[in-house]
Length: 117
Image (cartoon, rainbow, N blue to C red; front, top):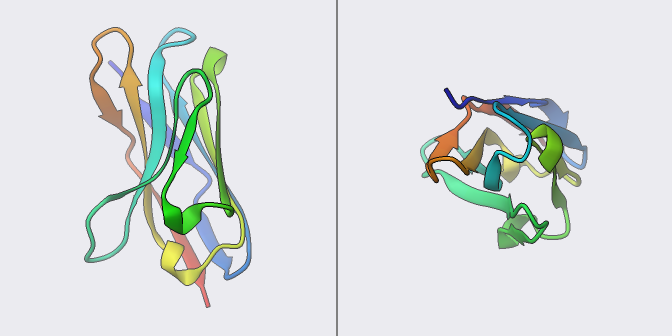
């Protein structure tokens, strides 16, 4: 069974940094596109950043220049380095990954990020 487990969320002051990690189950190189999404209270889930297995990245305009997504294909890990955090970055951050064997998308359980002003 495919599992994605996030870690690294927490409470930080505006201007601070956090690094999120997501570990995917399975043998090495098990995932195609991996990414991060977030959902603020009362809002829809939105894309934050994605990265292909080849390292091509895509970012939401609101995080460009502040967030960096990276991955370790051999370990099925994806990271999100978040700098210059703003209160509007607050939300539950979800890891998403496309599993190579069945081409289905999977979600982690989410990790809370709270940025205080």
